[in-house]
Image 1 (cartoon, helix red, strand yellow):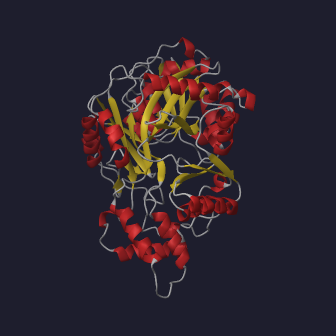
Image 2 (image 1 turned 90 degrees about the vertical axis):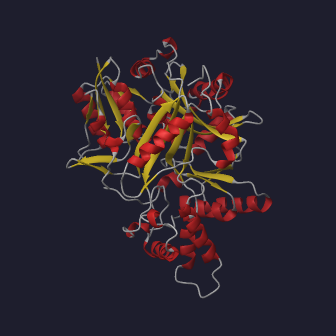
Image 3 (image 1 turned 120 degrees about the vertical axis):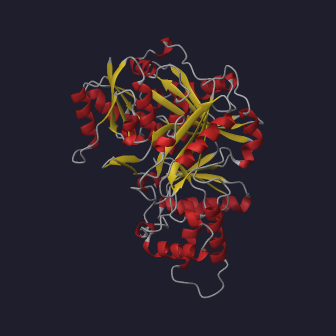
Length: 532
């Protein structure tokens, strides 16, 4: 019987703990730092240990692991991997699922990874790297004078999934480059939004339109080079459905301010920057997810393993990267017309919301596969068994304090934009823009007891004096599996309506309108003998 450690604070960590606790080989799961999801444990095996806040987190995690006699650790959050937690845990004798610190460059430096992939012959979108904002702005200016094709502009460093934006014109591109590299227009201090992560940016061709479909592809990898496919998903990171009124309101205000023909108010251009920012449907850490991916068949799976996963792993040591071990997560774009695929990004851990949704289909025990990963025995493992059902999940997030009054007073939103331009959005505590911007926390959460069949994973919650409260932008993940996709969606949406907390918001459209014709027919019937 093994004692395992899960290092993660969100829904991904809750899902890992939940599935590990079901294994007959697991005696206890220690969850650090965890959240209130531990109160949902029905096995009696999950125990939360939080940080003391007086010590270095890595030191404390290693102390906990040594004190508890941990035999296997799983690191969920990328920041702990980047800080070198696997290396530190192995120094105290704990086998750990996850790459060594030097290997995290695959996720932590997108510019380096793009160059690496290009050198080893892996297809990526055409790209260019900038370290100076003025050079990047000059380049995109020339680009949009010559073409109307969009660009994807992304921070090279870690930005919790929020550092990429598809820009359709020069104005959007310039604003985003400035936000990443110079200063965030929504903050009084006018500092780069993601700090050092935006010191270097990647500008690449935007693969958009109904022909390009994003695929989230996961593989378990051991240091002997064996890789085992371990889940696929269609995921949408955008904060809003495309037709939501709040985006329309901000777009209207932005248009009105651009046409301002009277004496301009103080901070006019700063207000314009604020409004321009609020018109964008931002990327988040993940809002909605379907598993398995509707387009993935055995042939495409084989191609992804051969053309992407294997070359990435095979060439690591030649470029100074230690042999990879852990969860390799490829974000791919697949063209349904030409059947070409390109790597957008590589992550070195499981995703959040993907882990919650993918693992809900797993029928085999999770622990033996993670143990084989650290022991170098993946080649001896049989393929895991998966439910032949769709798994559908959504994130419930903390929205805007205005959401209940949308369209009521457009003037109030203009006043808000002016206040943000003057004081920064941190100062406007009674007007929360909502996730992924500043949002309400410590809001009571009710109604979970009404949910019977849908799985609830906690993202940002705490139990304080016996009351469940929200502590993050993403609060809960709701997941349901069914051979019938429409039933899975209906069950999740009904559960979402049962949950109550102030400013609750969630996505209702699982597929963007421009992808409906491609993906929706695939969801009508679950494919037989599908891959993960």
